[in-house]
Picture: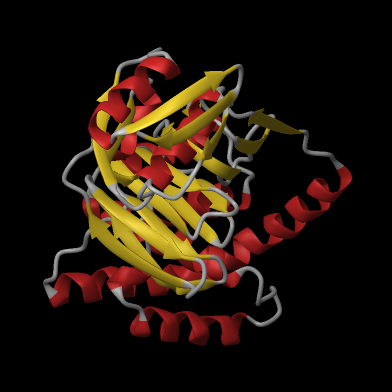
Length: 345
């Protein structure tokens, strides 16, 4: 396909002015080769990072900025789901970057016109936002406008637009949710949870971001996910299956680890109550949210730091769960309405 036509299509897509036929043509071109995919995602990343700092009158300055940005870029600066893995062969990478540099200025110039138009249109119209919240003891399944599915845990909230934009799909999350995201190579899916931004194109993963928790956790079941600190693109991690990002709020530190047992991260979305080396303090806290009850522990005598491992099938009663745990942990309990009292055996 003619490169000039491709440039025009990319510009229209990035600016939000592409028709469905335009987008389908570009999708077909992207799917033809890794080089095409690489070129598109480099340009999209550069466009997103550049539009807020340039205008149509400084194309020379933009050209030099772009070249400098490309030459100094590192592969890990862009999410791998949005920025395909590149062959480490230096010649191939150099050629790919030269191609990107050669058309970026034209592309940005075209897209800036539509970008300015889009800002005006957005200001004139109103975006209807939808808020879905679950109290303690309730879980729900939510279908988003693009067909993605969200399993929202207890004491959790998501906010999303009634219809997603042409450029991306963005929602806000407080609490915990498991996602199965519909693939769309032209529109990344972004979840904002506090200082953390999680970006995917199509995958399944879990985010745990309760407001009062010390850590925000992002665990991936399938596909690839990029997690970064908002406003600090250099602080990011790329996750694959069975990998997890941990953001420590107190230290503002983002790290990456692995988990061996998927049940520990995803069981709740299937209605399974699962504990793996979990302290009794955390167990009781989870039971309060799961069953919408208040649990009071009468100390001394009960070691809340003792760890417990066990799982309970869907719809198991609270009484049965407590009976099973007390057999191992040696405590007594009284259950009255929504009040539970734990005492030393």
